[in-house]
Length: 164
Image (tube, rainbow, N blue to C red; front, top):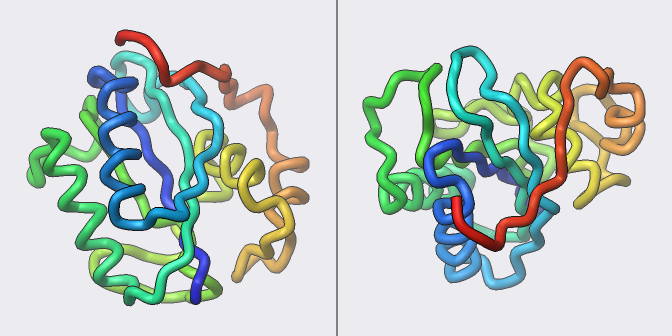
């Protein structure tokens, strides 16, 4: 069964949205593994800080089915499908990796092209799967994270408990 990794982020009531998303994800994939949550500035637009994390799970569902379920959960959390790309988000669920697949299932590209450029994706992924090899870079996620310029992309660990 392929190991799947998904980035989750929100900057609109982010704690509540991420807790709800995690409950929905765990209902679908009960063996869900979850990284710590990290706060970082909005990227690409001015807005409230995001809270981000990464989840991992094994599934025999095809990638298009996984992507469809991720979109359903985003909709449940109030994200309109026609929302502008660089704007506040109630919830973003982005497929990062689906096993060693390289391609374009559904409306996604795997591995996610910006995974190696976004601290809020790569750092939490390194926490969950340090020994995993990136299917294109050929190096482990731990090595890729070790080389990452963290000073230029600050993250701050933050609890998911509490109010927004």
